[in-house]
Image 1 (cartoon, helix red, strand yellow):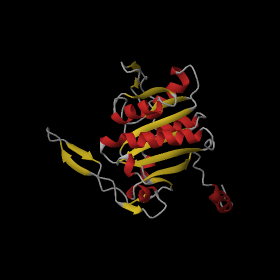
Image 2 (spheres, one colour):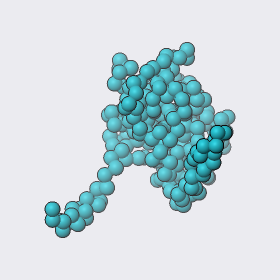
Image 3 (cartoon, helix red, strand yellow):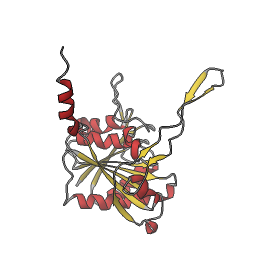
Image 4 (cartoon, helix red, strand yellow):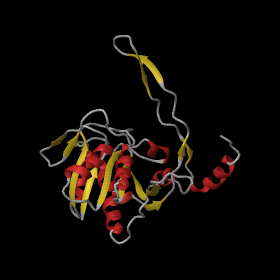
Length: 250
């Protein structure tokens, strides 16, 4: 099995290094990641500047672009083979609920699916860097299962694992995305030269975090796996919208 591994925290982040080591036990792994932290990059592409690569001493390839750039460039130019799976992570922090709209980790997996490959995104739901091994273990187990139970062609898996020792993990739950309240408002301050600058506020608290959601699973000591549709069409609304549009005369 051949895996393309990427992330959004940067090619030197601990999460991607731990995951690469774990995946090498079951697959041939090529690691291509951004040369800096690109958290919140979502599915953005670098269109106005050329992309450059650097081969690092550990064999990882750094790209001066976004997570989406990394996956696209690797598959279209850097690799002389087609990977069997694209894996993104391990992200430093959760990607739950609304987070998936902004996540570069989820975007890297989505780009793999856009290019016709099965893909998964993995995040450690906490800042305790002692427990990346827990998320890596869950990821390996899921990938082993995918060998006999492939993903549907229009979906990726979004995996979140609580930052706890593997011995304390209660299991894995299949979940839906929860939902947060809106983020706190942006704050303004000044830089050392007196010029006004702005910062995003913190994430909002959970609004929809009941049983069955990814928030609930993590809060109760379970790994959360949420299948995500890549096709965002609202099929159930198409007929209603078509009927509504019939009343418009151009």
